Length: 316
Image (cartoon, rainbow, N blue to C red):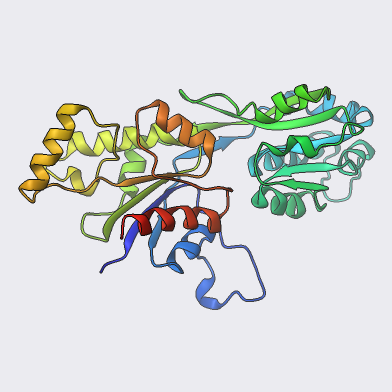
């Protein structure tokens, strides 16, 4: 039996360093490694890119108000990268020496309790801000762990482009429900990659068994669907150039067509869909797509577990 191919629509990130990393592991990706170790083949295709200039106009105000904040919430890796890059630019513009300058307001900001969402965000916090988060939540529903005495908060979030929602409201809504005042800053926005560029990165037909498409954000869904349409329209092959279309909720006519195809032994199986979390899966559902697996937590381990559980039920 050949190994299923899992296509991860995410920006490739090098495997986190560890004491057990071997030479063969260097350059292998976190998610790819987890899938490869569990009987799958996996590749990563970047479909969106962050734009980090949104926070710049507000940065000086953030520094000036550092003394009134009593905590910071980072909802993603990119929110930390945006703040850090803006700080570096600020040093160059105002001090011409980014290596030997200490800004008291910046140090005060980093001394506050820091709350992050997800393991990757926690690692980025330690890497770029050189400080460990006070509290790490596994998803955006952990706002209740923020103590009432630690307010007002500075909530640094992302802003997604395209037809998807601009931001996940879970944390802001949660803080409001607890009566905790906060200042919300949109740190970046996501820009979709050119569908033609995405299409060129798709695996060629015959590389592996048809398997899974994995989505990591609502804003990453639309460019992928556009890429698939691009491949379908430019290919005269009945197999859509090697791309097997994701399933939509079947109409009665579609169901009959599928049954006829299966009877004739000619039905090409649809690729399965997985999502990194409920926000992404809900967006896919809203577009009419069937989501077969959703990770309980946004980690490689939980994503593989969700996909493996579905395949076991299907006896794959």
